[in-house]
Image 1 (cartoon, one colour):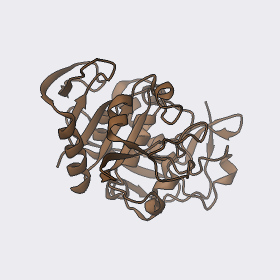
Image 2: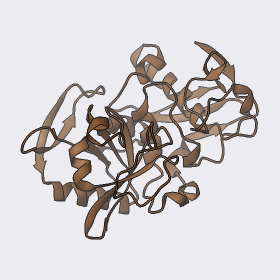
Image 3: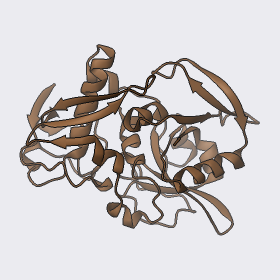
Image 4: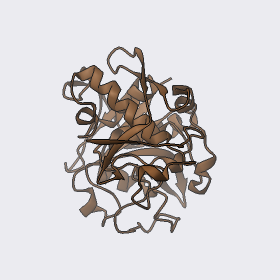
Length: 293
């Protein structure tokens, strides 16, 4: 890995449009950061939303930053300090950036909101210290969205999982007993209607929701959704008698090919927001995690 400084970059303001996943496979973490912006009814107003969690998690004294994360099992807060050096490949930023539309060089950071890059760098250090592994290996090769959400917020989550390929899927509430998502036990079942209501209630209460697609979601959704990918959830509402879910792709753009589903009222494929019916949600996603109080 080759590191380069984001000289002149700004850690504030922390705004959602400046959060865009790079080449690391850390969609769960980026989606967890995005989820802390909470309920968003109009994607066009997303830049005006604030994340209390993220604003309170970072302090700076120039080019050094101290950030706070939480151990998944104990909930214990841990502060890590990092500088503004981030990973590059062939002189281009490899990780999260402030612009989803172009490849960026570190020299372009001056005056730009680099907070996502700093959070990503600090989170890799945090997980490296927790696991004894290279931090980017620990964070950049997939994760469980709900586990990443607790590490960011410190708040316990309700985790609901299902297998949409089953003829009659069952929807299980589960409890993880490790911080990798490998050990868990069911704690009850819920109905689809109850899942929709819980998503709606959680967002209305100012809390946070993350989710993840099945591997073949890309094929099932005609390229609208990315397979095996985490998303943040920002609204659950009813439009024209149809239950709807508003998601954000951590890439910061909707998908690779500017695809849209018929029910999405927005024609913008470059903001990362995707509106789908709840029925489509149940068919293409396999779980949802909802933060508790």
